[in-house]
Length: 125
Image (cartoon, rainbow, N blue to C red; front, side):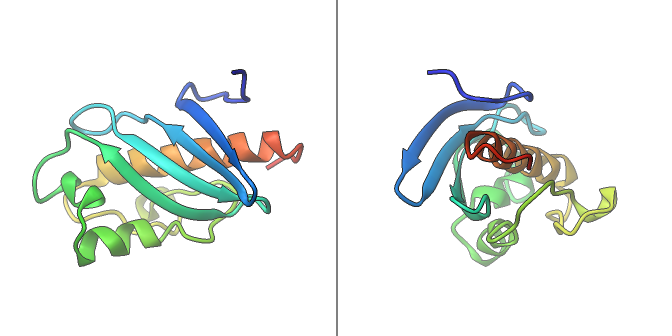
């Protein structure tokens, strides 16, 4: 299947009645982070799920954790549109403490999913 992706991060796109689930694979501190990003028909993030990763325990691994810190980190992306960045890069995404590289990688993955969904929608996101 061909889908628009200028980043090389998009691995698969699943169309749903409400939008898309886009599988992306950005590189983090410990290696590739396999993620699924939900994007609705208005090109807003509906959710971020980290499938597999090799990030450092208690630091970058928190991005995928089913605890308050992990949920809070992933929830920042909910409803976001356009191009995102961590606060250290002038954006609004609060990086995980001690895990800026992981936080940037997850943000890159979300950006790739948003751009892909925007192109599929025919918009210029």
